[in-house]
Length: 198
Image 1 (spheres, rainbow, N blue to C red):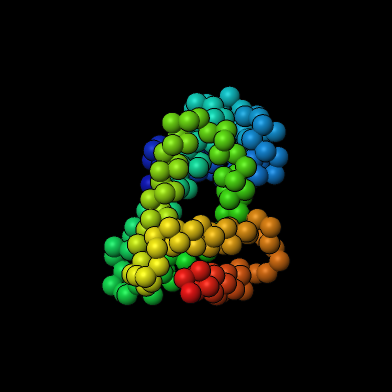
Image 2: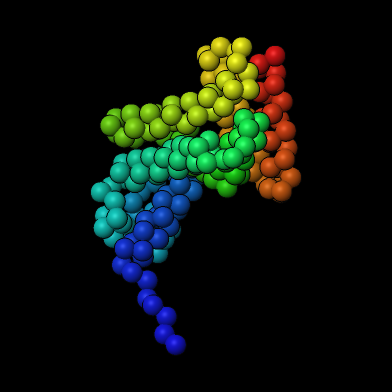
């Protein structure tokens, strides 16, 4: 029996994902300006110039990295909100799970976003910020169902504060195993939201 070899498109997609992951680790550790194309190539076993077959340059790589994660988070939130056959409490729990999973699995991306968004060219930066605003509004919509008396501005501020709490994982990585971190972060986020809307 023979197995089908991967299609060029799939192989290219996998290679791009591998490059983005390696670049995120390097940017988080050494900063965007402290990493060269050659460094990124070396991390994935190709020459620096070979990366130009996948990305136009380091700026394009950083842009795609942050656009991709912003898009994926927003799409995950939309899926939770629009397909869950559940009430707002369960939907909020599912949104928390999405953010917690991201925070635990991708602390390097959190660091890169916090430190390097200013290095993203302006058109892509606007797209990233728009996706992030849309992501926040998915949360605000659910929180408004749970707390109709709370002003939207307060719910928005509470959402950003919860993101700050959950996205602290670059500072706590390795302190606890993921199976302990998940419920702890969930409980802390729930408590923070409850305090914000009291």
